[in-house]
Length: 412
Image (cartoon, rainbow, N blue to C red; front, side, top):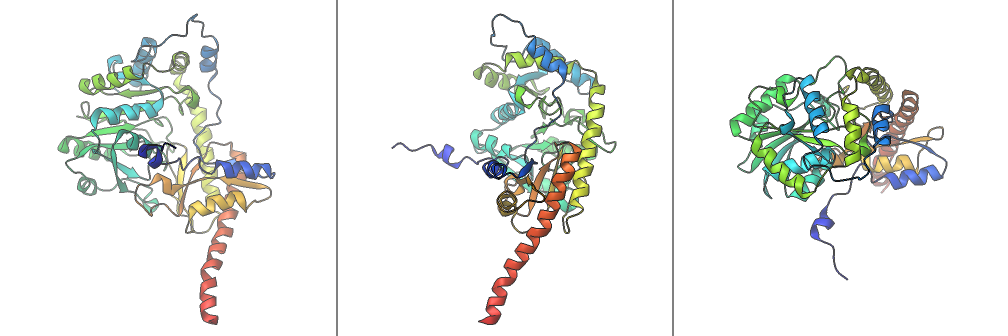
């Protein structure tokens, strides 16, 4: 029997999806499981997008241009200009989701074995993308106690080696919900210019900022036009994750020419969904106002629920729709599985993502979980009531397990 490749064997499984079989089993037992593990919004995809797809009337469903349809590239350019981000149509390539955009960025600026600095916890699929492209992620740890803000310039510079090609940031951040300030981005720009490395900026959650905060794009920082690579997607902005429409963009012509080669190699992005994406880009920006208000209410419901569990460390997130909570337990993997196999509160339980999979450093994140607040407020309130009760119960279970060996030793 032939063996599979080492690449296939060593590829990381998704920590976000690995507990789904346990959730399925729990539901079969009649338990209501609230899914807080994955960033799939429940906000309806806007009607103009759905109508545009429904009314697509080309007789031949043909390949689109590798760069993307002109009408969509121009729509993205107009959107960026309205957001004070100077990107012309020729600076933009439409990709099959933001994931492919990151692939293109890695393949364009890195050879196998080159390094990209990331700040952990980070979006776990960066691991898979780096593994498949031969890139080494070099992680710098951020901490719950600090609201997962970035460390000092000096700390970041210590991680730079001759193999460093870029710093990758997600702003607003998945999985922490942290929004980086203009000063933080200026510090990163200083490092990039000093060491002649790129900043890859995943700005998929640009619109999702709360408490009056305003997002700063890496391309709004002075002197970054040739060193910035922007990653974007309509998935979360328009609650259209299944459309698989993203963007890789840069003012650096050499970068974009190289990205185009990879775009040509995969032929094109989905044709029908590009038509739908254009309809979304043409909507009035006021569309986002009630959605932001809804997500802020959801965030507040999550934080109120976490406050009912003793010993949780969690600063209030200010962006995206995620939060990393540090729990007063030892092993979040076991806890997350126990939630689905041995626990329910009035018939309810929750599916969460253990946070260790969002770290590259072994041993980090073992006592943390990521919560995605993509459910309606009344559902989140019930979910968080169950989660708070579960944390309090599991903490006592671990304490009893710790005391048992001591009691046995005393009786020996």
